[in-house]
Structures are given as C-alpha cells and as structure tokens.
Image 1 (cartoon, helix red, strand yellow):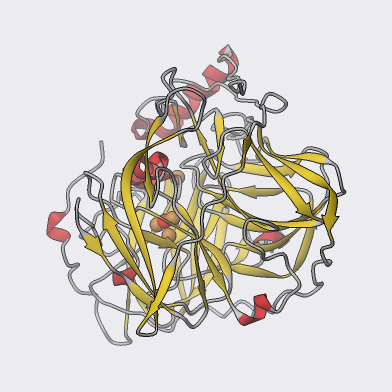
Image 2 (image 1 turned 30 degrees about the vertical axis):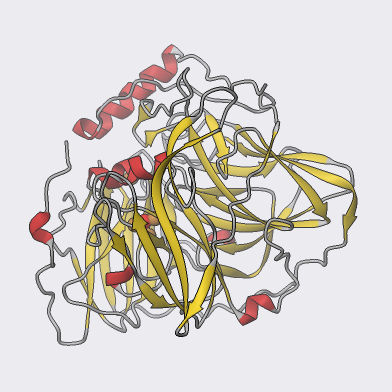
Length: 503
Ligand code: C2O
Ligand code: CU
Ligand code: CU
C-alpha cells in the first residue's frame, strides 16, 4: 500500500501571505483556500512500475504518415481500491507517444468520443494555423478532425493537449495530454540513448489530488491555479523504473496545469541537459537541476552505477520575487525511483557538440506584452479580436514583462523563440536554445526573438498565452495572425460563436 503523501496544515503565516497574494491580484482570484505546503520527500512508496505510454501506431498512406487519436472518457487505476474517472486518448489516461521525422507529411485523425467539445493542439509544432488545434478548431462531441502538415523543424520533444477556450485546464487535468517526439537525421546520428522505453524515457509529470473515493479533487486553488499533493508520472502514482543501461535519457514534460518543478536527483548527482523545448542545445549542459514551468520540456541524460537506487525529485522551485513560499514555491516531491540493475549495458558519453544553433536574428519589429492579473496588456482574450499582426518572414522581438510579484509564464504557437535577454542580461545556458514556453519571474522582462516563416493567413490566428492553464482559461491569452507583406488582417472566421468565459 503506498502511503498518501502528506499535505501539511496551513500555518498562520502562510495563510497571511496567501491573503496578501489574493489582495495583490484583486478580483482575478476566485478563491484561495489553502496555502498549505506539500512535502512528499521520503514519504512515497514506489510500488508501481512507471507506465510507458505506448508508441502510437501509424500507417503511411499516399506518402502521409497517418495516426489515429480518440478522445474518450474512462476509468484509471491510479490507487488501490476504486478507479478514478478520467479522460484519455486511445486509453483511459494520457495518450500514446507520436513519433515523426523531419520532412515527413503527417495526418492525425482525431475522433472526439467525449460528451464535450474539445480541440487538439500540437504544442511546440511549426504548422499552419488551421492545423494548430487552438480554440478556433473545435471538435464537437462525436465529431472528427483530421489536421495534416509537414514536419519542418529540428528533432524535439513536443506534446499535444486540448485547447478549448475556457476549458483547457479542466480537460488537461482529466488526462488529455500526450507526447510528440520529432526526429531528424542530425539527432539520429548522435550517440544518444534512443531506445524508447528502455534508455529513452518519456516522463510526463503532473500533480493531482485525490478525494477519499479516489476521484480527482481540483478545489485547492491558489493564484497559480489548482495545485495537487500527489505526483503522477505518466499517470503512475509511486512510480519506479528499472534501469538497464549506464545512461538514461529522460524527456521531462511538465504537463501540470499550474505547478513548477525543480527536478534533481536525491543524491544531487550531476547530469547533462541536452535539449530544451524546441530541440537540442548546442552542447550538453552539465548541471544538477532543471526547473520547468507548465508546458516546458527538457531532455536530460543521467548516468547510473550498477545496483544503485536513486530518486528523481522536485525540490522547492525558485519562483522568484515574493512568490517563492506559496504557489507551490515551497513544495517538494519524490517523483520517480530509478533502480539500476546489477549489470548495466554500456552507454557512450554524450557527444561534446550536439547541434549548431544560428545566432539570434536582428528583429525589425518590437512588441511589448505586460502580464498582470490574468490579462495581457490589460485585456482579456477575445476570440474575435486580433491582437498582433505579424508580417510573414519578419524577425520580431517580443518584450514580455511579468508586472506582478507572482508567477506567470509565456507560450507562443507557430514558432520557437530565442531568449535574447532577461532584464537586459544574457539568459542562463538552459534558456539559450529553442524555447516555446518560458517562466516569467516576478517583475522581470524577457526579450524573446522569433522569426515567422512559412505559414500565413489573415483570418486564422495563432495564440500566445500564459501556460498556467487556469490563467489561460480566464483570458490571459492573445491572438496573432501572420499576413503576407502588404496584406491586412481579416475578420476571424467562426468568431460569431465567441462567448465570455470570464467569471
Ligand atoms: Cu500548450 Cu496554447 O498551448
Ligand atoms: Cu502551444
Ligand atoms: Cu499566468
């Protein structure tokens, strides 16, 4: 029987700071019932083998690699006793891992067997706006949607999840998410672990909370959204992994709706970060921690000695500013126990050079976005409003400021960006590669440079938003269209269905 992680009681001090946070954010807060800290370090029984999401089957039809994903309701056995009502793709919880190679044409036949409208967004993917799966591509209950595009970006760990306006947090938290691995010739030629499920391990990390009857409980809302007290690793509570090779590549995906993790090993062993959201770093980064806010990914390679056991854990993340002792900033978790076999297959060292990343381009357009409350530039999201008009082919600097003492992050569709500067200074090495999501430290300014190549439509927007999904749902999102030089933005199709989700 796994012990339930313990959630410590609220202290008067924590409650006081929580109330202060609520005051700072004003009416943006629905309720802040619990500022309690969670610490499961040493308190998790690792009794269940880590579930490895199956690789999605595909068939090549007329030169297209075709996948099938069906979203449906189900029941998952997370804990002993009662099952938990969930949603998933091709199964009860999460979805299979899609794999495709640069240059390939792909098509995904998405079937919605839920009793609710959903959408399916390809987070981190460079693709036409009509295929993006944002709030403008609803799939009604019982309907199908078959987006198709050509993979045209470097090898990377991407993911997919629903994006219905106002409902994203709920649908992701029920279990709708999966990994999408991109390969290319350059990455395939490197001596890196790549045996899926053996030494190349997808690791989708989420936090949740269970009621006494094992149903999900998401009532514990702080400023950042709903925080849990129990870790799900690929949907496994109390997960362990049998390690059979000297080196293991972990593809870490923070698919939590609100929580930021600071991943490290229980013995603080060094490891190498080899990739960020959009692909490989130029060279492996020797480190002993990697912090990921919701939506971010990192690939790391860690080495083992035969017979040892070590725990992947999340230490208290450095959220910055005044945010560090609440909003999960003081919480610690045991995530996954890694059990090395008595004999390990040899693994080569990580190559000293992984890829070349072009220097950051020279922006010709400057934009400023200010994140405050749950609005960007003082406006809540509107499906019928285009907030930014970008000219195809241009390189732009988006200067994004978190104007609060509290956490946000920034995610943009269509492109991967480079972090040119944080408060005018060069970014740390883990943020020097391709990113599509970045944590916004309180009161900090992020200069993000991106080039909008390939896809344009004056009437079909892409999104940018805070990836704290409750903030996104409350309207902390904007829309941009990419137009050809000389073209004007049009009227957004289907925006007549717009309705107000703000409470
Ligand atoms: Cu991961 Cu707009 O989303
Ligand atoms: Cu996205
Ligand atoms: Cu936010």
